[in-house]
Length: 246
Image: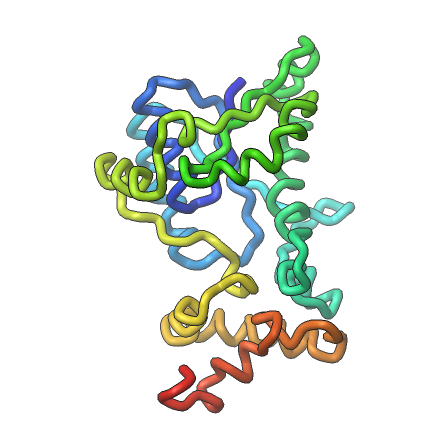
């Protein structure tokens, strides 16, 4: 049982292309939807699904976090309800654990083919899209990978020697457009140019990000806003912008 956790970015797209090129079978492709991806990522999922179908690979299965009564809970909703920012703004990665990793694990726990593998005392093979320049990332999780009783982790891009450039080239060679960066539209790790692009090309999403920041402001003590040490509203709101700082 081979599965791919598809993130919608360059590495995971190149991973799927490479697995097809190397004739390595894929049984399941999961995309964990936070409900707040950039529009280009949602559009790319449809493009990738068509490519997968044309190449005899399984479609992308979208999973997401739910409440105890089974209702969908997006990351944006959770932040608004709790009056907080995404955990990355505070220096943590809980949003990824809760809205990316958690929904995929929950799906697999209830997915019969995975259950069958585990019942036989074997492990599901999970392909991870770290490229050849990201050895430090796999090194950090090596011991955890070895001790995982349910999943056997495999890092094909590193094995093939595909760095970022090689991944982009593989996508071009497959006839696919470049997917762009995958992240939430209010991700605290976004760079200034990305925030400005969001503001200018998707003002509705920028306003939602500012509303999230405003909603959390009464509870902020250690950070200033979505920029951690600065507020998106104060730095990038058009009413505050001058030619020099925006």
